[in-house]
Image (cartoon, rainbow over all chains, first blue to last red; front, side, top):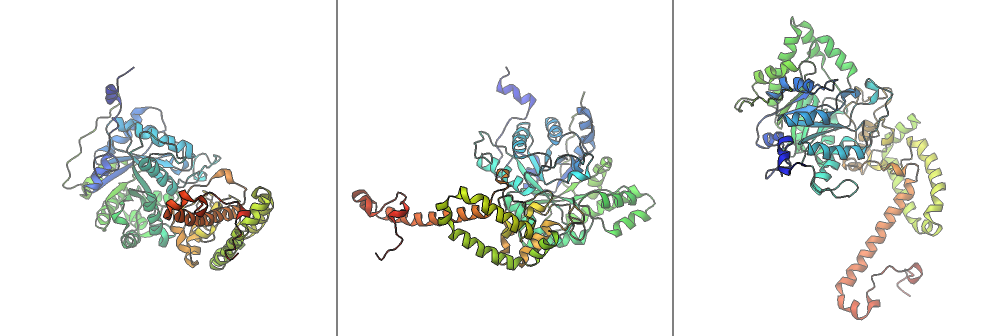
Length: 334
Length: 192
């Protein structure tokens, strides 16, 4: 049997959060200190080899404060979010454990939250999840025991009250920085800020949004968010990402749920001589414009199959100006 | 029926009124239900509820009706059965992500709520559905809950009285009773 002290070599010791914080998450520290935060989405491997996880993380780790490990996004089966987070956390990355309500019921989810916290995961993103019909196994049974908002409230109850939803006591509560998603450019647009208010009320600490390609729509959304005073109660990280080509953009728009790309953006991609470069250019411009919108705390980069561009995009956008360059994390599987 | 459901949401304000009246009637019936036994009335009431609400709202008998907090749009018709929607997958024109030819249940809910007097209730965070209540009568549940609340409020009055005269209660217990009174022990008529 190993002594408790030995555990420090294997996992992060279970520390209480610093004063004024709800977790000892790096992302939370960055956000609360007022620095512009960057999170990036990691493309989960279809493999059981840990080195594939570290390969996927390497191009993102340089600029991102935390990496989001998606939970079977689009209802397609990949390596689990909790597995990826456990590996990356041990290698020193900040991770965001994504939970979709589609695949697991309340018993599984609450247990997994404790498991993730024990593995050192400090951020969690609560999602409803796409329907099973969009994925590679449409015959699966959709669960949806929780919705994203009741999930946020459940994890907050576990963290702050130290009990499961059943009222049973948790001896060491999961000190998680709780996130939720929002999709400002999708209908019903007039009610999106109101629903965000519900997420904040439920207990969300930070918000990552789906892709923002339509700045005027996003600005209108943020104006209402500021009217409701939500930007002072929650950290908002709008989602951005480089498009690969006009064709890919069109495909995304019609096949991936919840994506809104204005025609003007697709036209610009169409006219470009080097579409991939243009996609990157558009992404950088969007990040710079989004940064200047009042109430924005950071940016969430989702560069599916364009992970190699993420570092350049973030560095060229200049949003990290004045921040100490991140120490390269090793994370090289032997 | 989809079209009746859409009609009910368009007329959310009228249905809200109707529902409030119904609720008052159900609460008033609580003593009767208690006398017959809630267990005995469960089946017949659930039957009537299933027929009526099934026709009007495409009710799925979740047993935890929240129609007045969801713009009279039944959230169990959402393929993801969200209790705090809409999700982020709503299609252009406000159509459902999973069933593209159906209007998003939650887009309709927010529209319905905007027409209602107590529409602000939609801003409240609702808990996940208790699946063990599936098929039971929500009307009876509301009647029980509201009646219990009323009783509780009455109890609170008695407790306050007993606490205001603590010594009297010790010397003469009957002067400030706290234990629950059997029905026949109280007439409700104070002029006797």
